[in-house]
Image (cartoon, rainbow over all chains, first blue to last red; front, side, top):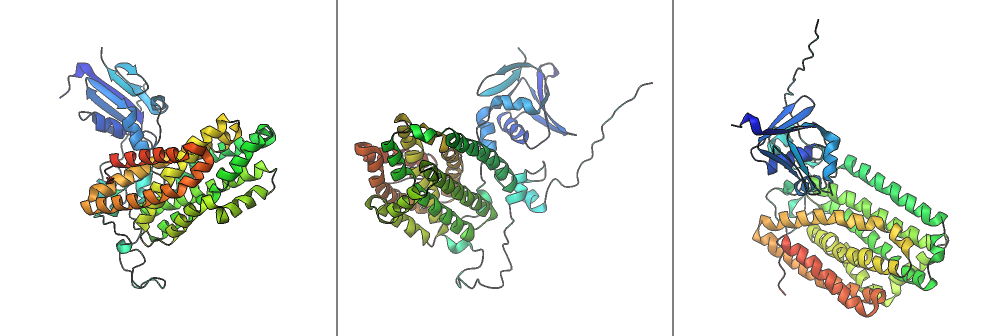
Length: 92
Length: 334
């Protein structure tokens, strides 16, 4: 389904802190392919993957700083576009 | 020679308990909140009616006029269960404790004008009785509610309220160098002073409400929705501008706590109102009834606190509250 060339992915640790991030990615990126691997979760999309602050805040029920993503981040591909409201990866 | 490290995936037979899988499907691991809170309360085999209430079972859906197909359709957006709640509150307690220590050690209240100190004693300190009332009311909700998601939420809220009553008490003690005079005066005001009687009457009427959901609306949505923005936001800012900055440090928790509370009260109003038109009408009726009663009860205190602006401030706070509830689907005819 995805053109291999423009696939971006985000890999986070599989723990309680990352759960809301994974849920938010699932909700905001309907095409995301989410794979649970030992100890980590790999989220893959063709084109563009976004983590929205507001969606994550809904899931955690408190204020959430986009920078908190990095605490559980293992790896990613793509060019990063990050601000206070979102963390977005895509190929430029 | 090369060593190949390969990982072996062991797929768990089940992701969670049966009741959680029934609700959320077994596709991914359940959250701690879901496992700790859902379906813990018994729903069947109540052989005996409780001695204190012959008309209801020990856990009974008919204790409220609100009808829900599934009482677990409301989930606390903060996802508090015992573990997450105590970890977060312990962190906040450390900060509050440090702030009290700082104010005490540096005698920060010495720099506050005597007349402002008196205002703190007159307005802020008696609020400990309001918090204690909130503690009682949430205890009552814990007792009578249906569903362990509600009893968890209400019990944690009960403890929060006791904690805040104690913080206010400690402010009263700090003001008088650990003498209880300010507290005694506040108690006397609460019992006898004209401006507090409307609120005291309303809170005492709430103690004896039969419907726990009405109590939930009256206490946690309406009364808190008026008291906290009015006294722990607006009045607090006014005090600070007049030189009582220590109060800012000592009531920081209340402001944070209320911001957090708004999240779940919004979610609760939304879920309940969306369930059915009957629920919507009942909730709107309660909001209307308690909204006008409690706003009127708070007015004389607001006049003491803000002077001529008092009535205005109460109206603004009430409008904000109703606008917030309207977004969740609660409609009031005016």
